[in-house]
Each structure stands twice: as structure tokens, then as C-alpha cells.
Image 1 (cartoon, rainbow, N blue to C red):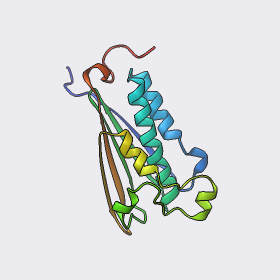
Image 2: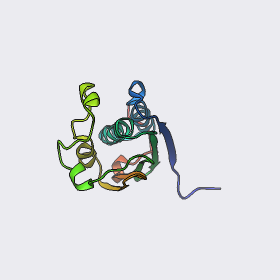
Image 3: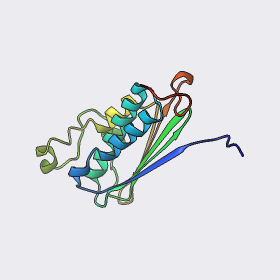
Length: 157
């Protein structure tokens, strides 16, 4: 039997305020992409987008959230969601430098208001939905060109 659609799904539970694990999911995802033979630029863009989403879950949620990545031969779909406080003004949140991070978070070196901006720069498609008091869902896609497809051919050296 042969599958006409092959994909790899990676799922990570991200804990709120767990700064010690911040970056672990994005590093694992980047490593998986490189092992599958992804172009290094694709792995880098994916790693940055996932890292920023991961840190947003750590910084801004009360109960953490989930990052789910589906790697297919011609696209990478990234879904980050939580059931936390939500984003009051998405348009403002997308502006460079806008942040709702507490002073405590800023003292740790986070909360510069560039996370969503950096994500938008790294992905080909991005959708952000949020309801105050219910949570936020961030969906991202990175499209792969024929020459940089994942899982087809030999891995990069």
C-alpha cells in the first residue's frame, strides 16, 4: 500500500513561565527539519517563527499552550494556541515595539514587542485569532519550493 500524502506531526505542550524550557520546542523542530533534509533557510525560518510563538506562550499565557507542526513535502504548517487571556487589540499587537509584557518579563530581557513582527517576516502566511478571556490561535505556513521539499531525496550534509 502506498500513501499519497505523507506528513510528520510534532506536538509540544508549552508551560507558562517555564523560561528554562524556552526554545526547546523550536530547537527540536529545527533539528527534525534538518534531519529530514530541509533547506537550511527553511529550517531557520521555521525555527525563528516557532521560537517566537513558543516564547509568547511562555510569557503571555496563564496556563501555557500547544505548538503543533505538520511537516509535509511541500509545506510546513504551524499552529500555536492557548486558552489564556487573549489579545485585546490584534492590530496593535502586530505593530513593532508594542508589548503588554510586565516589567518583570522585560527585566528578563523579553517583551520587546517584536515577536509577532518576527513571525510575520519568517512565514509565508499567518493568521491570528483571539478572543479576550478565551484564548488565542496563531496559524502559520511556510511553503516549500520543489527544490527545497522536505523528506524527498537525501538530507543536507
